[in-house]
Length: 443
Image (cartoon, rainbow, N blue to C red):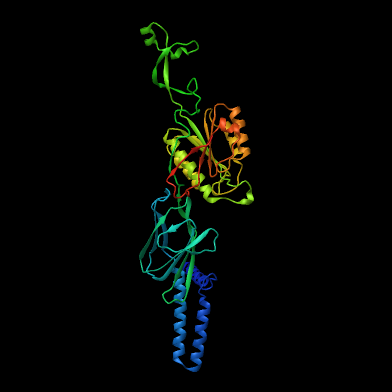
């Protein structure tokens, strides 16, 4: 009988030694175990040569401290989790948002000093919190310092005030842990970004500029665009050209004359809001932030008002969303969530210089249904815009153009005063304190 030597134990032993060697020679650590043990060995040799037991004890202490520091460094962030949570992911202007940081240390290794350096956007305001400078552009530093015991869970709660529209982002964060003796610290990057979106401010509007029952202005069409055959409004005398399928035979038999069914209209009026985000005539003049915010507030308030009046409302903006398309395009609609889509788009608008608003109107007008009301919110009623609106008003008799001028009263062409409704919103009150928008008609 020939026995075959087993290599299992040899393989296991070599694997352990390989892992130990890799751990010993691991370069990307803040604790150089080779240096610690080297210093300890040197002191031990000197102690043995001089026959000094105290030096040997010091050498043993250095070796144990180095080994302990390395083991702590390896396990400091093991089973340690950071979680951010918010009371809501979408908030209206001035609504408080509860922010919660939860750190869990699920291991039998305490962390006597634990720091969180969270880079948050500058528009965030937390009650009783002072932010520090951050090297990241557009960010400030939120710093938290506390200790974590064995199997401990620590929760820090903040109250955020929403005084600015847009994304309020937390992250990325740097986590810093220190050992109980203060010998070594370890840093870890927490790359996850989280946050909540704040909608633009909305207030009541003093007047209705696009009446719900007159989507074509003062012009009333002879026949409704769409009728609902399930909603009978009454009957009328037959007129040559009426479809035979519309004849009401019972009413005809009762009266002795042909009678035609009349249905209720099912088409809802359509309004498209065009927001101009360019506040100066020349690019080098920059951007008037307060005027832009007032324009956004007017557009949001008008959209809400018209949706409440059963309009189909769309939004078009000559500015990009953060990291998205160059212009904002929300098709007209009145389905559930339409106001949310409009408010989200307005909240994420980034101040930039896109196409002129008249160019955007020319591009989108053919895609809008006949009879749609075109509402332009702008702080610059330029001559180019007026000429474009006059040309479009002459060519498309079905559209009604309404201009809402924000800021100073515009200088209008005489024909514009006759053909186009122009309203003005003054800047007597700041956009963040005004409680009601007064629309004063100037043409």
